[in-house]
Image (cartoon, rainbow, N blue to C red):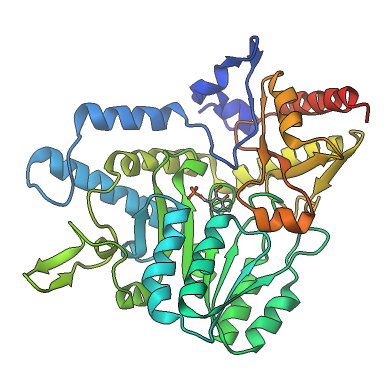
Length: 415
Ligand SMILES: Cc1ncc(COP(=O)(O)O)c(C=O)c1O
């Protein structure tokens, strides 16, 4: 990374080899699909190569040198995450495959023992499928009820509905995104947590679009469960984190059974290992967990406030310019105080896949589709949207290329 007097994108852009790519008839790649997954800096790529070249071994088992080195590096990532998110007890950090697996773990290991017929689980209209479907399955299996907090015309949660649900006294769990992956809406999470606590309901936060983009202080949030994925914050795919309060984890049965999660196994019975290993059955994704540490180092060096400020600047710039593109409908708060670096939009009567295909010819990579949020699509009364999402390496020039490309679309469709 270069001098901190430069803009964030200038400081870090050269660390990302893929951003030098030319695509589609030699166009510079403009990567604006960061909500799906971010690109990786050379520091992360080198960390994984270094691991396989010099240290590769299974962990928590053998006493030889490589096993010790790998175990130490794996556990060092856990400690690094604890520091990054202000988590006092690193044994509350469980490595999983991603946000999806973290939420499923809670739905199975906590949900099956704590949710019964007559109970209510509350989620919201702007959740990713991974924070809806596990709760549908759980409520269908147990006879509990699944309720929603709807969104208003600005794409913000109607929290008075949460009050109504909580007032029943039957809510066991509220499962909510910290930041919507489609609208970019930032949930007033402190308010939601307080409401849940006052009502005695547990709260799970899907932080997949929050931890990569802003300072998150899990230690002081006061929630019960928090989940996020490494690949959306410069890290590798196949690694995610479930954080949960110790007493909850201690009282939960394991999610999966096998190696490493046991203390003693006899013919007819088994006792469980300590936290966090009780929830990490089998050989974990050792290499990727270890190289995730390089991603956290990278973000720590930048500073999460600088990450957020850079995204605010780009989003504000993009929203202003997009508001002038003919025929463009923008969803969500349209206000960077309440919005992360995600903008969803449609051209009236033009399918988002057509928009994405046309602008891809200019090298601009955005996402088109339902974004794993079909409940939200139903609410917006569309089948799909286009989504541009920013990260630390994106520039205003790239936003200009996006806008020029969208203007071309408007021309092609005579809007
Ligand atoms: C808000 C949100 N939750 C959950 C997920 C699922 O994450 P993963 O696919 O890494 O498990 C995503 C991924 O896009 C997301 O944006």
